[in-house]
Length: 504
Ligand SMILES: Cc1cc2nc3c(=O)[nH]c(=O)nc-3n(C[C@H](O)[C@H](O)[C@H](O)COP(=O)(O)OP(=O)(O)OC[C@H]3O[C@@H](n4cnc5c(N)ncnc54)[C@H](O)[C@@H]3O)c2cc1C
Image (cartoon, rainbow, N blue to C red; front, side, top):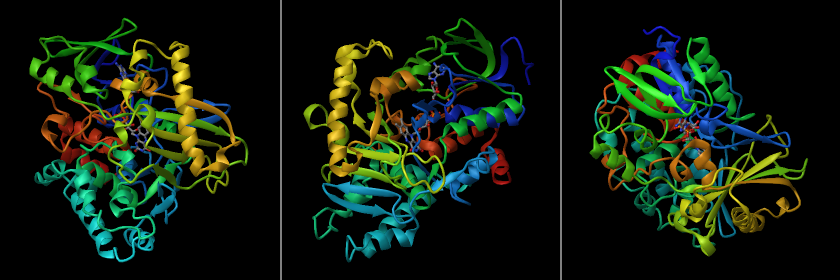
């Protein structure tokens, strides 16, 4: 392994989001001299939290599946020292996600039998359809052995990447709620915000995410920034380096050595690079002789998932209950066209989530309200930066915040008078915050119509140059964790790492 010092490393990792940190941890543990370069003043990417009036807000993590004892993420995170260090709040077993359409509400519950039992009263006679939904979802997951910490043996998973999530859910549209006429399909897809809500969504994304949540849905008590702290501490203890305020702006190669230049004018040499940021942004830093034009053009032509508009509410003490579930409201029972709404028809949905600061919390201290927003809605301010976007932008933000709050208050009248402070984020906030083009929620839009073109593989044609993160495998804590293991598997051998993770 290379000697440390003089900015010479075995591996440079660009971006300290969950993906970069996990790759850094694995490689540092294997004796690599790694250095993570992060453009922000704090590491973590979407794991970052921010504080207003003494209250902590999540930026990109509200809950996750797979964290329960013996479940997928719990087993992976055990290797990283996360499982025993984090305190978790299991969401309401009988309703981890409440799906609201018009003025009707439906529970999505944890545990297969319970999932069916809780929905049956709303869809009498649909027991066989609900069992079929769970069976088919489990069938998709079974074709992704890494979700069971097993080595992939065939290519069964590719079939599910070519299947449309909306079409799959549509099979359940004949079962209707007798009182409202709302179809079961709209309830099963009611939390499709979790996988971007696009009509192009491939079935595997929907199935892996839904299955993990039905198996057990959790919030991290006290905030997901703890994940960042535990991982950065672990990396440093193992001799690795995590540097903040070091934005990578250029990547060149001379012989077998890469040189990453940063906005501070510093250079970092390494025999290997892993990029945990958007692939298009990564390739734009590299000269023509390093990247084939066809590859650069393909990556540059990919679309990203829609962006978001988010309200971060600080609540007056004891004014609003802590909700041990997430609330997804839809204006209509067509959850697959909400991402395209803009202007006067916006918003078509919102997600309300209260953060968990302590076990058995009675009242919420904060609430976050998320909805979709297209990047083009704020495109006229593209050339501005945070805090310097001008009055017209402030007016736009405030108008939209008011419109969204009006919709939220219809479902939660108790919020009126409970809010002491509100922060607002737009697609530009996230664009500047995580470096994701257009402030996209989950990075590149994977499409069931063209899974090959819309999937970025971790191994590239450039020797010793890899991608990781939500743009490669799948987004979210679970998807990004498995993606980081796949990327490091390309370097160390997947079987070798999985064995270590399983026996940790
Ligand atoms: C609003 C929102 C809500 C979400 N809610 C959930 C949820 O409830 N549950 C869940 O599981 N997932 C959720 N997700 C998804 C999840 O947060 C992400 O998929 C995951 O954190 C992405 O990790 P990453 O490492 O791929 O990328 P990121 O977290 O985007 O990290 C990229 C890092 O690279 C840095 N960077 C960018 N450019 C450069 C550069 N040139 N040089 C150096 N550093 C650079 C960025 O500052 C950032 O730190 C949510 C996402 C969003 C946006």
